[in-house]
Structure formats: structure tokens, C-alpha cells
Length: 212
Image (cartoon, rainbow, N blue to C red; front, side, top):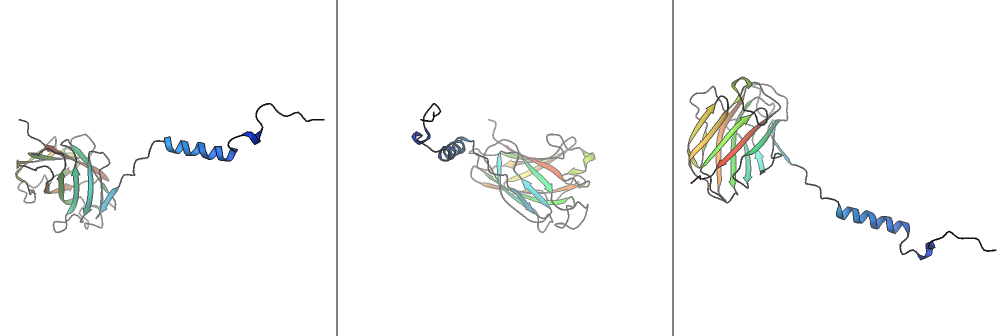
């Protein structure tokens, strides 16, 4: 007597065994899945970290602890002539006026080295501090470009002869009377003070191109 078999193709006629078929499907899903973006690199030096996570530019290096003799140096590459925002975070305990490098003390001598990779000349360059992203930094937050010093001697640029400081309702430095040609690098020195230090704040960088 013959035992009835289930309808359909017998297993011996399948082109693929179940295990082979499963591996093929997984391989296909891997190929069509969207590629994951590279994890954002955060650069740390002294008592702070620096990140280009908000996009539009690329950090290529950092160094220093934030003193006048050993400033915090951030090397960047800007690929357009539009504003970009550098995110700055304290990575060590916050202690106002403590020892630089060991704690985030709110006294940050900064140097920004910026490569102009935008294919357009920059005729001005503006920095703006923000304690809260996209909101002006007011006097009461304690964050500024050394606002209490009326005659600062630490603001300088390799490519611009003059700098205007603007306070209330913004904390801004506008470097002018100069130029940064494409594929050239400009250096900017200044002092950031934060008498009520926060864990995170922002530095907006705005290269300006000719309007005519």
C-alpha cells in the first residue's frame, strides 16, 4: 500500500535547501539596507570637547588647554560660505577660575584655524556665542568675548585688520578689512569668558562673501 504524499513539489526537487535560502535572503537584505552614517567624531583637549555635529564644516584637529600660553586650538575646514555652529562641551568638572586643563574654568583663550574650501573669497568673518542654540547670548548668562574688558589686546586675525565687538543682545566679533581666498587658511585669536560656566555652549561662525 502506498502512503499518500502531500501535494506540491517534493523536497528533493527544491533548488535550494532551507538553510541556503535563508542565507541568500539575509544577504539580499544587507545589500538593500541603507548605509549607516559614520559616527560623529568628538575632539577633546584640555577640559573641553569640540564637535561639528550640527553640520556644514569639518573639524580636523584640536589641541591646547585654554591658557594664553597654550590656547585651545581648533582646526577646521568650511566647505561653503554659510554659517556653521561649533558645539563646545565641558568634559571635566566645572570650577570657575580653577586650573585650566584640570577643570572647565570658564576662561578660554581660543585660536580658530579655518580653511576656506568654499570656492568663494571671504571678505568678513563673524563669530557669535550662544548659551542656548539659536538664541542670543545676553549679559546675564555670563558668557561673552571678554565683555568686561573694554580694551582687549587678545583679539587678532591673520587675514583681517580690524574687529568690531557687539554686545547686547548678541555676543559677536566681526573681523573685517581683509580677505580669505579659496584654499587659504585664516587664523583668529580671542578670549571667551563664562563666569557662570555651563556644560554646553555654541560658537556660530559666519564667513561673508562680496555682495557686489
